[in-house]
Length: 202
Image 1: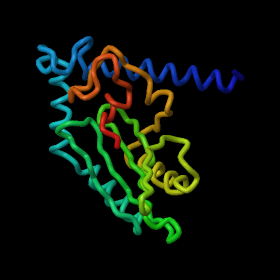
Image 2: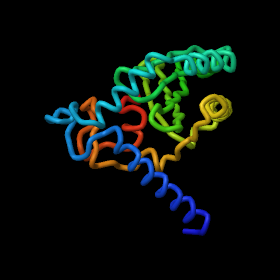
Image 3: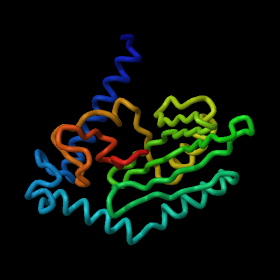
């Protein structure tokens, strides 16, 4: 491993450790989501208060969605934010496809965390032609066809929320001592992306 790679690995490790430590404020340690004491914990109650405050004041998010509509005038949008459940805002942007790609459905999805000033962008693709069907979700580096729109969306997120994009090494770092309160991950299986954003990333 060269010096640049070593430095990046060290930075990712430091960021991961800091975020895991930070998440102790919002997720109890060593408890399954359906275990007695989880929902009564100070951490769970703190998370619920934060979600409630976000539901009361969605102004900045609504402004961002409007700016995204202006930036991508030929796209369709699905604001799939669920602040009763996930500590993040979520927007799906359906990208125009060429006539040659008829039957394809390409989307960029952005997640902006409420817990920390960080965000994610990933790509979703589905194609159905006759009896043939395929679907995938990919994290950076995204396929070349997505990258120009990805860059525009990243710039818009950073200028609106002053958020930092997390690399895959951090996003998918395991957090074995915490469970997402939705109960669909399980103690020992959670990753940072599940806890900072959402476990539902279809």
